[in-house]
Image (tube, rainbow, N blue to C red; front, side, top):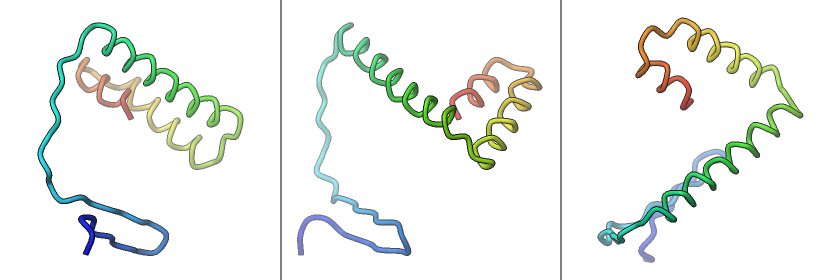
Length: 84
């Protein structure tokens, strides 16, 4: 058997790999900036798609998130909601 275990269910496919350790590397300011740049680009793409093709499900989720953000009393709660 290969080192991957495959599991099929309905329309989802998941694969998991046996633990093989971790790769650790130092990072510098450029690596952190690159991470945030990529994160911003990917979030921008997702936001643009949602804005150009809103579905009732997406609009409902956004409405619920906005209500939660408006009623958040603590900065930590606001931050956690905003990450959704």
